[in-house]
Amino acid sequence: MVLVTPDAQRTMNTFLGAAQNLTTASIDEAQVAGAGILYLEGYLWDPETPRAAMERAIDIARAAGRRVAFTLSDSFCVDRHRDGFNALIDSGRVDILFANEDEIVSLTGAAGFDAAVDAASARVPILVVTRSERGAIAVEGGSRVDVPAEPVDKVVDTTGAGDLFAAGFLAGLSQGRPLDQSLRMGAIAAAEVISHYGARPEADLKALVEEKLG
Image (cartoon, rainbow, N blue to C red; front, side, top):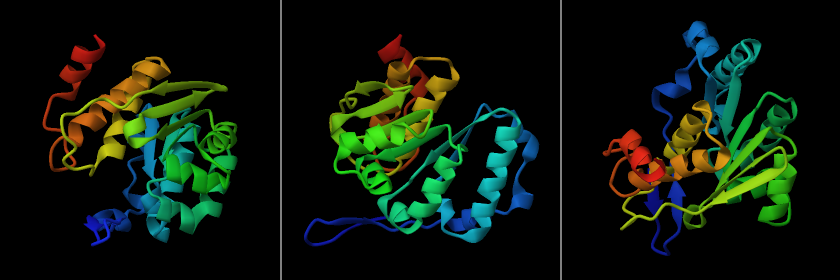
């Protein structure tokens, strides 16, 4: 839920729902081991029970040779769990790190966006950072790719934009596409979801990608 105050300040109130009760016993180990990429939310780092479940899922994925993607989720998550997030990253258990501009600066403590990207990208195989209307960047092996935001007629509701971006990017990556095309797929998915109310796409994302990327 997003609240807008009289002075136009926006705050995010996150309700984890049933996810806060996720236990290690709930994990389908075969499904995790068989997945190409395991994607985890920083929001679930707050409660101890789902945090243990996520760490168990990471262990399963890595033992099976799968990649682990982790999103910082929100600046307030970084503020509360900076040490834990940094420890997770520095342990080498995250292959793909997602963040936005504020989150990556907060995580690294660097003075500015580019310095934060340099600091974080040296610690993970792939770093992806979204920049709202300025598009997104990805860094792999010291090589940085920038893509612009996908144009939309009108921004209606930004709920779900980050998750849809990650979904598009990871879909591209799992298909063996290069970073620039994977970023474009993320931008296309995010642009679709912010053009209407609700966090679920209303258009056929596969068809949109085929139309725009060929």
